[in-house]
Image (tube, rainbow over all chains, first blue to last red; front, side, top):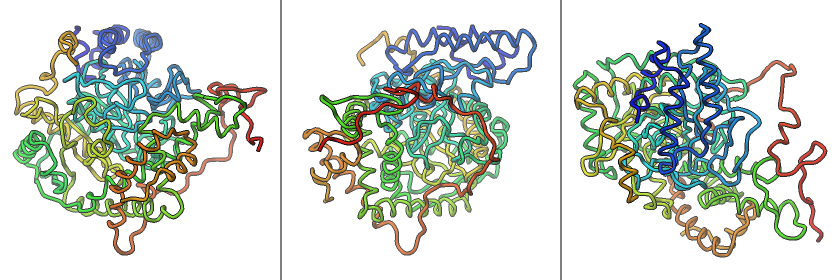
Length: 506
Length: 98
């Protein structure tokens, strides 16, 4: 394998800018890697060979002609398959949209194109982003490049496995309850959920509109910052996008000094329920931060106890409404029963055939939560819990500049282990969900491997709304401290993907 | 225990426009009961007068100038439709025969 694919995005950008490599060469390297490994890892549902190479050649031509280019021009990227692309099918991991080519690009996709970033392909996800493992994808699960019999996290396991397995230097994901951060945690990569509204949702196939946010997936914090700087900003097509700029994340990722920074450990997200190796690594990183002059304080967020319950009412309620558009009329599948059925029967037959078990479960649960007679008790209470969680955060941010917790309670579990147990699956997101309910930004960065199983562990930082820069600041600082304390970069500990594939047995 | 019964699941599936088999109804009844029992804890979470939050970041209405802008063409809008005719989406009968 070429070492080029193992380089960080920021290094590749320098090589492109100094013309040591061309975008066509670089894009070809990644397409070769995808060709050799995607059959097993299943990161991509669709590979864009031709259009990616065309975009790369255009950038190379412009560079040769001395035209002004975006700093990231020529850097290839992977895009989660719930973001619309006019030149590639967009399925959201569902049979109901198999083969659908959207008539418009998502705003974030338009921004990538405008920056001259070739799109390598569309990455796998749990159907309509409902899940934590990619096992609910209609097109088969993705595999974790650290251990091929394990989940790469979800819903964005296609993007996380692509970045962790060097099938892409960088990727886009979406995070509704942890779908960027949980996959990052279990694959040793970086994932950010920006502040709600920091990035346009136009062209993101909606799961739960008040929770969804698009964000970067990468192998280091600076790379993610560079990508957030490309995709962020107000979009007239998304009335919930923030009108103001949040500043440069790349600049924030270069401030490595945490002296005097107040870091709040969330009491409710430590200790019982977290795997030993996860807790060990968490405490080690707190020590590194303290040694560097950060002030570690404890904060309490008592309402987090109800976060998962509130989330699994609000999300299904919004999803049941958002997914009503898959009605066999305007796009996607149509299944007609025998005879001369009415449109209602066609819809019901289409949705039976087109949706998988988790999607059906959540639509029906959402329909229940919104039914008259139950609305106040369930959905109404969940919305009040949301207020309590926001109040907990507000109080915590009085005491701390950023909050910290493990990203997830465990390392990657085995494929098949939780697929029949929805409640066990939902618990993976215990530490990530509160940020979505409150709209605040969160980052997961690699935090070494667990002593008991040698698998990646993640650490999560949270900041107040609009303070995404703080996450890049503290994340990049901790990353630099880890590398110097350990004497190696986390990704160097990952097994060779070709060796794992050759060994088989997964 | 929650009040999720097979009949309720059938009713909810009907409202959701999802055809379900008897086997699916049995399975869903069991799973939804567990989930509903678990999420029902929110009912006990809130004491006193707490306002509801429907949207995480407070925002006002967004307006734009009332000028015509480019939009999707009819062909583009119909490009993904399972069936269309004369520039429209074509669907089965809306009303049954009964």
